[in-house]
Length: 209
Image 1 (cartoon, rainbow, N blue to C red):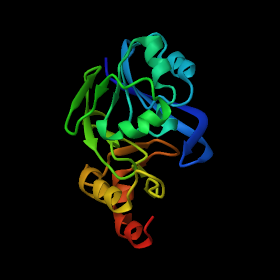
Image 2 (image 1 turned 30 degrees about the vertical axis):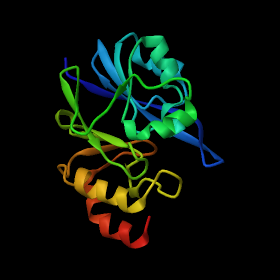
Image 3 (image 1 turned 180 degrees about the vertical axis):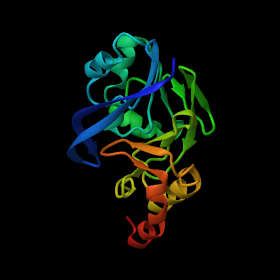
Image 4 (image 1 turned 45 degrees about the vertical axis):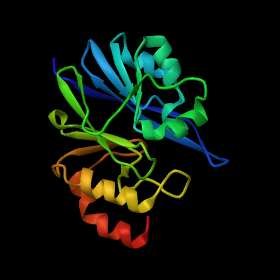
């Protein structure tokens, strides 16, 4: 059975550096009718579990450790037995949200996750957060970018643990080198393509997005 991508939007609060903002998050589920992985367990573990519809959850993959992307991860792991995976460079952010519960495993650049006959390749893309990763699924012509790349530009870099030149380098070297037809499925908002975003790189740099 061919892997497919299911999409769920959950709502909650993003909190960092003493501020709070209401946000809608994209939760991506990759798998078939029997097994799946979840990319970014945001806000509502029960809703994500319901969307799995009885499938075996193999892993909960965190694109980074801002609270709005990981707040439901421990509860979802507890309900399903799936491990939570995070790049170790984001542990300081993770501990701000879950000081008493560490992730179950680490993500590393170049690591490959297999689900339902599809490979997801981990791309370490720091900038928005030190341990931010994207997940490239060539068989699905898709890259899941978390908050690294959006429709119209890079993720925010105005808060702690972030750095604008680093995110631009990550996008230029790790993402814009992917095939232009690759669909970019983001952590918030609408999807785009690599081909649509690549021509804007110089503009992003000029305005210091």
